[in-house]
Image (cartoon, rainbow, N blue to C red; front, side):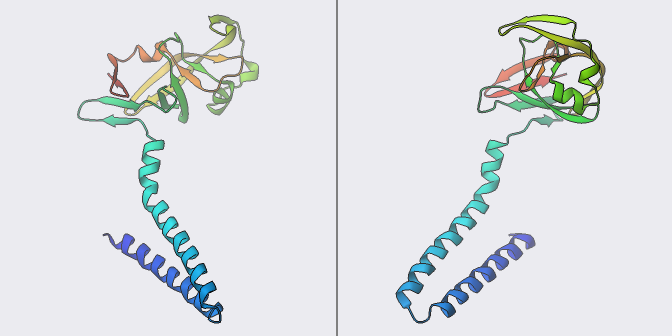
Length: 193
């Protein structure tokens, strides 16, 4: 155990002792009531400790993130619970979450993400029409100054801002085709340049 872990355990033990002492003092007249409350608080205390101990495992599984392997030059992205792959890229220095979409020919930003990276969605010219499964949608052409994924930075990337509502920005083939290898391997999207 590290010094921090010992200090945390000591703090929890001291807190548990203080709570137990308070209960004994408050309920010294009624032993059965005291026992019942002690068991309840003991279970609550054990539950909190168990939750704290398991949190790193739970958060690691539910918040799996993309990773960069410097020895192979690969960027590995785990599949999410909904079966899609999501990548967070720095666009003009701002983190933007993208749904990876190999069926999309362009990088398409939501209006909200466009605004976050410094574009004004209200002043854009939504002149491009695209035929999608949901019908015709209109978008405005833009240029992204910088797009960074791990150690890779691209400049002056062509993209579109969607005129309609979208849940996530889409990472289409104008960006994905810049990689020499794009593969799916055991629940991971693997990108390599």
